[in-house]
Length: 314
Length: 273
Image (cartoon, rainbow over all chains, first blue to last red; front, side, top):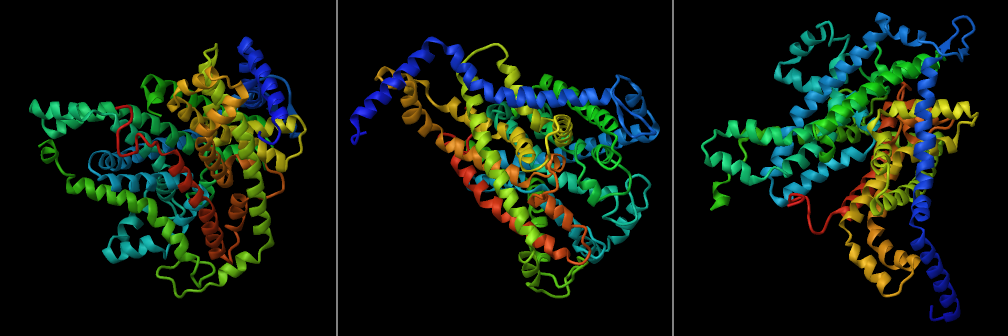
């Protein structure tokens, strides 16, 4: 500025003119701020979701393999075929099981983190949860290929403990089992829980932080058993956090198509079905219909979560 | 008095916490461990021997370098675009009250609240309807869509903490809008934007679900890792590349955490109290 006072002067008058203009027309300034983001998310993204719904209402001509662009419900009727709705049920079942397991594991960890950890320990554990959240999910899943391998670490430890027979027995169980540990739904379940656990811990921890210690003390002073205090005071207040976390664990499991290719049996999951139908099979309408199911399930879930106060806990 | 009355964590809770911590971190150790195994097609424990030869195999692979370069450039551009779009949206939503404000907050979050496959296939069907060739720019479009929310969240959180008085004071002292922005708002937001940008980059760098749908023939690093998984003869190479991917994101994420730490309320203190 000192080098060119004249220039600075002009710049500042232009600046003032601009700010005066925007001050008189706050609507225009707001529009300029909103426009790029709205074009991107409102037009490109929401438009894409809309076009997906349109695709699901079109159908595939069986003989030519071309998409017929007339509205029909035939694609959705295809979803009702046993092979197809079983995929939806299987995926939703896995998502629910993973969500429950994440809740069960996340709660004690978050509780310790909030109530008992020393400040230094707390920072350490907090960062320990954040880090995996942002690092590659594929890379983290890969680790389990070696852990769960037939001659891998887990079997090695279990053999030393004499528990390898238990695993073999579990692999024989119809729904959860499979030919080997890696190729069983047990492993798919373990890896999902491992991957999404941080998404559950953080909102639960945030919710627990907001439980006032005085409530707990009051309950104890009034003679409540610690278990009663936990059930009647802490758990209800932590519920929004659990629900907020479950949005992520459920949604992430519902839409994944990578892990079922690395772990589990040959039975399909929803994401895989979408991937195969839009790619190799070239049946975009059916893929879109499956995607719409996932989208609809999540919308219902988000609506219920909002009522449970989960959005304030995010 | 109160301190001494506060019960210490029971042994069960301590064991559960330690178990969860091990569960989160032990697998990462095995990645490093098996990058050095002498076996090329199995993960026997304990490994029969250790070698560093897989590093050479990985680093001589031209496809790996191409994938790394693509991921770095897609990440950089997606991050820059997300900073502009997410920052502007945050500014708009924070300052003004207008019809549809909540709807905007909702559609910003939607790309990460909905399963990634929904975003992926939706963008793919639109881009192919528009006859847009799949390649570098379509990958960027996909990544920006879910990265906007990261920058947006960081900037909104900082704007909430920033006192509106300093902006008013600046105007009262005769500064123009751009001057106030340049000398008052931007320095206050800088670390939030930087942290948001780093996290957006990390997210873009590791993303595979949406990318699978919006990529053409090129491979980003995660897609490359996924493709070499099915090569039967050099399993440890995957571990070497995986280590590289972790290393590239680990330090920046740690930095982002330090940058966004609220000086008035560290995680050791409850929020809003």
